Length: 469
Image 1 (tube, helix red, strand yellow):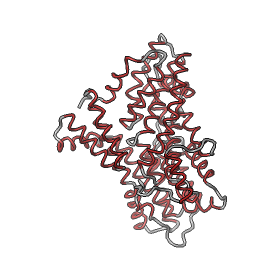
Image 2 (cartoon, one colour):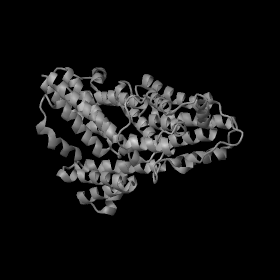
Image 3 (cartoon, rainbow, N blue to C red):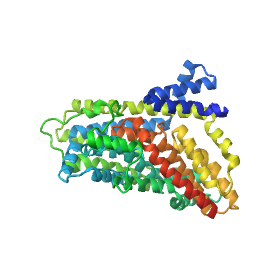
Image 4 (cartoon, rainbow, N blue to C red):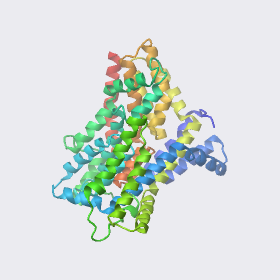
């Protein structure tokens, strides 16, 4: 169905889902209600509409790709647990007497190191650091924040990441960006104007180091973890299945940290970066498949389990990420509904008359944040806004690729990332809750004040930059 603008009704499904998520603390129920409201607004028969919505939203390569990554990450985490690799890494660090501050800084650095994939970064960082931060009495909310606020922002700052390649692809054919080379150079030029990405990464480090004290709901969560030893709030629903948390290695198993812990990550990094350099396209899913295959075979050779045991472990790994898969699937369905309702068009139409050369950057940032917040997708926001905002910037510069054009690209990129960080519908937000084993809504509640602080600072800087440029 072609996108149709239903006016202010177009934001109702997302608003209802977001409000219910915070009220009921049940993301699955809230997303289902949002989807049903959307179907009612479009006038579709509920039963037929649900079927068509699922086929349209989930029966495509984009969702299947993300689903494949989640499935293989679940298997890989389960095999990590079965091999005893994570416990071995945790015990190796215990000798270093890592306290809360050190554990947070280590998680921050690890999140930055996994710069090539916003999906792998929170899952790997959260899985590796969970036991370490638990023992250091760091709340799961804090760990999920560190995972979330390093994963996507670092990808927006690396021109040759999957994000950079995607953004360059959207820029080809706009203004003077006639080919991939000039478009890729534009992505390089915009990095210094990507204030949200830069300050989001910096703020995580400063908070982890204790230079900036915790505030808002996060302060309460950290106080609870430190004083009561509760890394999760009472009544919290961790987004990690019990199947994963209950997997234990067989008695007498002694993992080799390089073979069982670091090597799978090296395979993923080498495959992802290598395929990008050779083929021009990073094969992230294939990288996970290769790592899982390696780990399975190596564990068989090391006699860490029979084929039947490792297959059962793999199945439990898939079960362990099922909650995240369901939430992600429903988020995709809600995103499909918002497209049908023309939510993005409504936001753009409602604000376009306000934009002047001075306000271009700040309003582009805010509009992108709204679209990303209500749709849960920064990449979708980029696809919508880059063809609108960048030509507008070229028009204001007389067709020249000046700082205003590069800053406009950055404001789109940062705004989409900002909205993503505030939205419980975002895939990377969901994956961060999963990796850290945190309650999804608690993660969103504690992260929003930090994201809003950086967002407000970014708006001020874009306003000043708009005046000077």
